[in-house]
Length: 76
Image: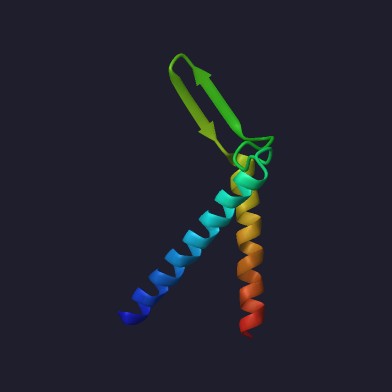
């Protein structure tokens, strides 16, 4: 159970660091808008808005896959 707790703390800290980096990047480069890439679907009608970030999800998946692959290569 202690290992699971450590893992949660590490993932939480990693998410916080990633969030801080993205936040800092948005301040440093306001023209770069991750989440509004070409291919993301925005549907507005009346007072409702539906946003489906297909391209952003694909990009995040590729980046996360590369990071996890690099981690697995380094751990060998």
